[in-house]
Image 1 (tube, rainbow over the protein chains, first blue to last red):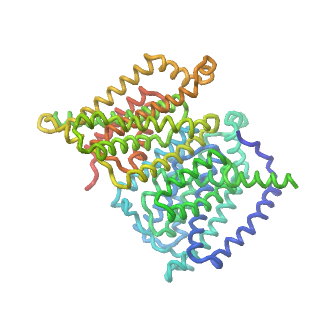
Image 2 (image 1 turned 180 degrees about the vertical axis):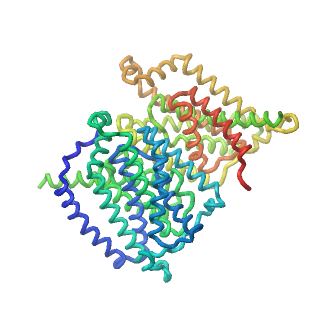
Image 3 (image 1 turned 90 degrees about the horizontal axis):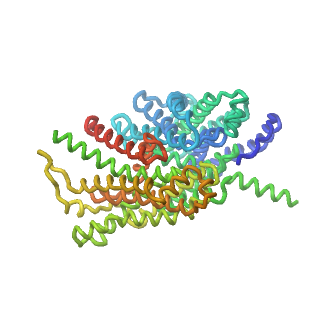
Length: 333
Length: 268
């Protein structure tokens, strides 16, 4: 069912990607100057989720493993930050990010050893079960994690203390923090682009397309899957760390497996067969959910219907469908 | 000694309901190779329908009427299953497994809100039936009589299913389809019909689990999502697709849970 992967031409495809990426980056940088603060903050949420979905898609789109437990790594990142605030009285965003990366490396390395022994549905169930373990820990150990009340995270200081959020929180979040998220987002996208186009990324795609052949070519499947799991989880953990100051609070809800379902949802919405799919899917999903929640209390019904309709009629997602439409238009001329 | 007996009964009570849920999940996987993420919500649907009928529609009636109407939730979920399989799941058999998981996840979200839409966000209870049974004394403690009914239904369902699958013609067809769908189809089995029947049976079991447990608890939103994770644990222990495994897994989880509650109680 998978399309043949075109031969990799690093210079050509990277140059083309840059031609698309630079104008988008400029547009994104203009957002806080044009849109009201609420619009910028909403987009910041979308960009944060895009980092998480990008990491998730390294497993689904490139390695062919559907994880239903990425909420765990998102939550590990978020709770690492919250616990650093609570116990170590840290306030620097850079230290938060480092702490979140260390925590998610530890957790994903351990979970990965268990999970990558399996594929397909069993991989999905196992990741789901392990994420539920973390969820119940966050839920039950309330003297550490705050239980259902969660943990509050104050406004951090950015760039090693150069920018502090002492003034109006809305202004800080919609400007300084937005740009911070944008920079991290840009770095993550560039890093992921390098990863998926590296020999390592090619090996992952080979595993996805034909495990047996990849093994015969000499790819150490188990180890490659484990590293992919690790990288994927760390990206999602980083997203969790960026999300916490934006939200101001972390609760066990983000560890629950239904949140993993949302990560899967956004990736499929954008299209998991393309690099940009999860990014676009996450941003669109963020708007979709925000408006659905504001529009009706039965937003789950709305989103569920969208998801079912999507997998029934548009399995390639937004990016795949747009690409097909574009190809048809070009063919007509 | 009495305390141990109570713990044993509690474990069996929990195992009975878990077996009904996980057995349905396992049966559906065994025949159709689909992991139904909405299965927990199917169980919750059965609980809601029964709680609604017993707790509101015929709330003034007496115990025999309630008891006769107890399976109505299971019948409702069976109808739900018979409608869902041909409309939503059939297009996915030929596609990658990921899409099945996504579709059933969408179904989970829909069902969760459909229950909220029909029955509101508050817990729905059918405790009158539970109370009408009274309790028996076990040594120095008292134990609700209704729980014996739940254990009995769980045991009866296990025996009935075993007989159904290993001793009837339908069971032979079901097992043949699960082992080799193409071969069964070539031998003249109407695979589509078997799939509808298997899915309906699986949903019926989950609905029955919800229906019999709801008088002693109550139907709340989110009960399905929690039940799904527990039944995953059961089928992972017993092996996905195996009914015997689901039975063993349910008993193990039932005992472990009871032991965990007893010896590792939550910090106050």
